[in-house]
Image (cartoon, rainbow, N blue to C red; front, side, top):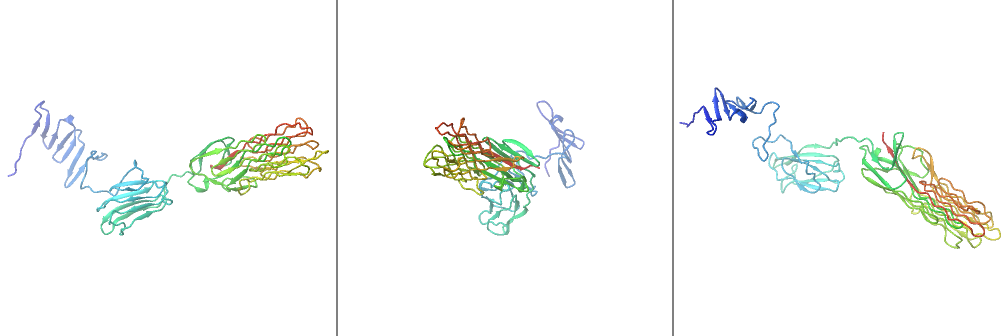
Length: 491
């Protein structure tokens, strides 16, 4: 015979409060304020809501709308797995690791390829992994089974090499091992239609945004476009112009001029020196804007990303019987020296060389002779043309013109930049050499002898100083500073 204990009530000794109480078909566990009670077929909360209910052979946990939670640290058996994993969002994988059953991983291979080792599998085990940074196509993820176990029927590794790929493996048995039950090679991401960036002086032209840097700064791309073509940017990078030479000196060379354009993404009328544009990525680009060189000094470089434009070469100074203009983005002009008929070459342009050329050479200066004191000072080279050169004395002489610059509408209006400085005049020679496109004119051979500086943010060369027949002179002029402009599509 089975032993039984039959009671209607169990109460606490201390305060006679209810522990278990049977009334009709309902058994209440604890007092009403204790929160639970049970009936013959139900375990209920004090408010009557079901915690556990039985109907025939079906047992239900909770009621509709309830949340069933397994206590922290508790484990469950017998319920099986629904084919999902617990995604490890707080542990992004960047190096080789061993997966655990029931977990999903975000693999970041942007820093290099690595391996996911599968755990020792038993039937029903499940593991998932997804391309965290859409970089599997560049840096693969290798998936390796444990020991002698198999992956898709083979004891060998698999390589995930598709951008944005995600896969789920289930261990079936020791014959096939891990089987890929889900493989997504579609890359479903939020679309960023256009580049988002800040820096410099910002303006717009049509459907394009323009960033203009007249001094050092940072161009920050906070988001690249998910449409590759829209990451193509146009640019203009101009180095600082050089100063002209002192004491009947040659004109200063213009800063190097480089331009890239992306048609039809950012159409506009470009200079003759245009080449392909530049692809932007999400990063901070340091911008350098070259300073113009003072008299008889070269200009400084300007840079954006991998594009560097050299500073202009200085014009040659004095009555030296040797040397010549300094090389640079565009070369400096040679002076007007001695002896009579001697040649003083201009500096070479496009130094260092790039294609298309970033500038042209300075003009050649020639020696002067009494009594006419006629000679020539060479003009500084420009982006669009070489500096002017003179014939040997006693042919009509003076300061020669600076080389022409080039014009572009990258800033939404046509502006000429990177013109060379004019050479300075001497003695009985005529006026100093003219200049254009931001370059400065050479000084005349009569007071005040002053040359003109290159225009700021054009990269124009400074004019060489003038000098009269008895030696009076003033210092040569400085070159103009450079500029960096970036243009890209925003609508």
